[in-house]
Image (cartoon, rainbow, N blue to C red; front, side, top):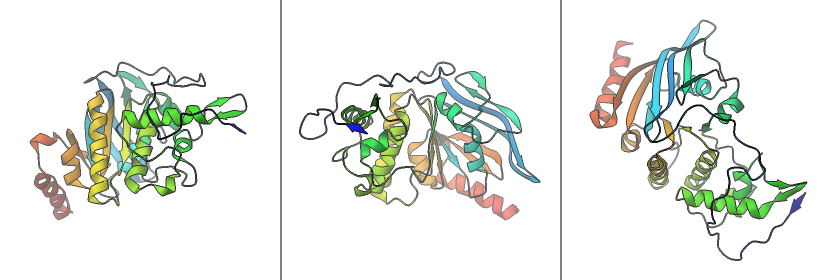
Length: 281
């Protein structure tokens, strides 16, 4: 059931920012401060086995608010398992997770999200047949009794997209009419509009051309400049990681084998480390 609200005619125009949740539902009070430079996430000694297979071995990783950490690794290196542990989907066999300076035991994906951990996966979880604003509020629609607050959702979507510098023709446009870069940007904006403190981007540049990839890299840079969000960029493209990330970790066979600021390394050095692994295999 829906109830249309009066909107100003014409193009989508940003409005004054609204409160985090117009339905009154709040985000669970999360751990610690998340100001610029504060450590947002730390994992210490994380290990995970699946039967006889060791997927992760003694993983140590950290990222600060206002920092973009690049996580590089080939298929099978353990990236997906690590993401699932940080997002509460898997529980580690050993080690600990610290969010905002406080150790947490993540019970589920919903629990991790309530503490400010958001993830944008490759499939984006967008519904092509729905307009942008309804995708933005998918499964968390604003309501007034039994009615959907379409006008409020449109305005909130316009404001959120404008805040991170995303331009689309209209939030009433169906998602299927948008480019791959625009879809990715909408998924990212939706994630950071939830009081996110840690954002994981799973291969956001996969299958994108140079122009669209550049748009997403600029979006990541704008999010970094906000200073209140820690970003982990999972990728295969070494050059793109070097372009946008402050620091890079290399994950090989379930272990972090390299951790260095991007200013102190190069694509050539990273490739040599990977090639050396294959020569030793």
